[in-house]
Length: 140
Length: 405
Image (cartoon, rainbow over all chains, first blue to last red; front, side, top):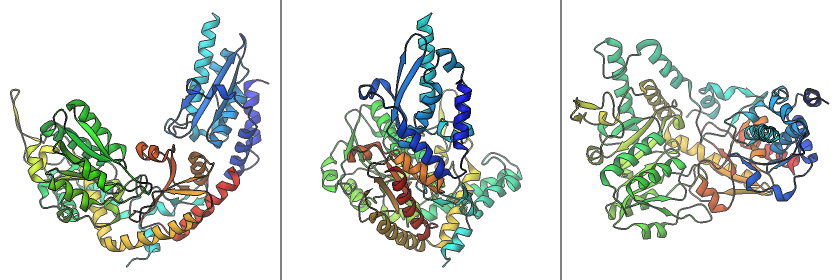
């Protein structure tokens, strides 16, 4: 699946209800289903600190694709982290750098990525792109 | 006495819905909503007599200047300060404390001197003193708190010493709601010839502030936390101090004579009001004060006490919910945590039910450190809130628990 297809699937998945509680319940479930990060990566080096909730993000680059594992101490943040991983994990650095994450807006979670929200998510997206740029540079 | 339905009708925003649910506004500690009369007062300045104050010879400037000085008199009378010269307009509590930390520090603080704060302080009453201490080589001394979130007076008395230059404490804690024992704090400091600043940001809206009785040396508060506009605040200082300390900002209007060799300063209070002041907001603040007086400060306090005990009862009954700050003397502010649930998740879900709370450390990280937690959910109430809204919060918390545990 292309990145756009994954994003469109998520938008489709969230369109089942207009009720915020339903959407959050789905987000909570998605967060619970996310593959766990190896506890040894839940350390300061991989911590993206937000004022409100913490996010840990660990990248692995096999020379072609970058895969991410992550976690958060807040469950809703964890759900959004899981969505970001669905979209951006196992992609080439070029794809990750070029991706426009439109699904966040479409499923009504844009406020979670605003700079004033301080939940670590905006920094997480930045960090994913920074890792991609660093891996891309290391390849050359 | 106005009933709460009529009071709520004075605040246009309180009837709105968010996400299709009636708004339950429990973030009054961060900022309060504005009654229609305040909105009208600010609107009227811009529509009818906007002109820069103290400068023009023209009609509009005169009218604005008059309204601004009338607002000053209104504040003076409200806080019962002795003289209008002692009432300085600022941008808010943060601006007031930064100003005093700078000016007082310049005049009176030397290397090795000490400033006493409490562990309950908002960052706005910590960082400006830290900055000044770094500049001057002075040291902060911190009054500890007990498990209930009250300051330990005996420890405070021990901290007072010949090196103490100033004591600066909150009237009430923004994070826990604790009301501090100001009489004891101020009289002990004065016995040691030490002046006291009171950060009234969380105090002035919850009862009667009478500065002649309180006898503090400096008092700071924000307009937007007492139903007035944002961007206006007050710094009160006893004239004997304000006359002695230098200005914290230079610019227009605060001067007497300016040459490149030397500038002499204007008289009080203008010495501390450099540049164009936010006179429309000052007029709005005066209107907010009139509004509070029309409702009645005693009545406001009694409404809030009822809310305080009802919320305490409802929240205390919720299983696995811990309230931080259990002092008997409190403003209606509740900081709490639900077992195994991140405060951010609680806040996000409550938000979608139309309930506005604050989550995080509330700009009071040392308080969170005291309890070994990384944040709380804070519901801060005021007189226009209702028992129904408290019920909505309690039900909302139960719903959060079913969703997240």
